[in-house]
Length: 140
Image (cartoon, rainbow, N blue to C red):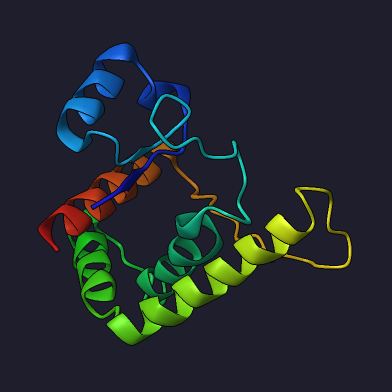
């Protein structure tokens, strides 16, 4: 298993990086890991260009009013993601990488990659959502 870090400063403290390296060895995708990842590249970051937007649209469809309801929705949506969907998702991702490799990293104005907005009204909700999603993935 590989771990891809988004390089937010709160995630790159020395203690965190040391823990990740001890746990994952060379399977850490981070500016401090064995595989560097382009910073703030939503077109390349699997979670950003697909998963968070997809999960959010389904999680908030019934407008959860409590954290328990929100957590239940997140668990349900994550559990319902099927291997076939992930296969298509990864296929799309690899085609993005091929296109970027062919363009040698230059700007690609002829392609519009859709960026999903991840704004959540209250920061506390964002904290809870991220923590819940993290726990759901650990459980899978």
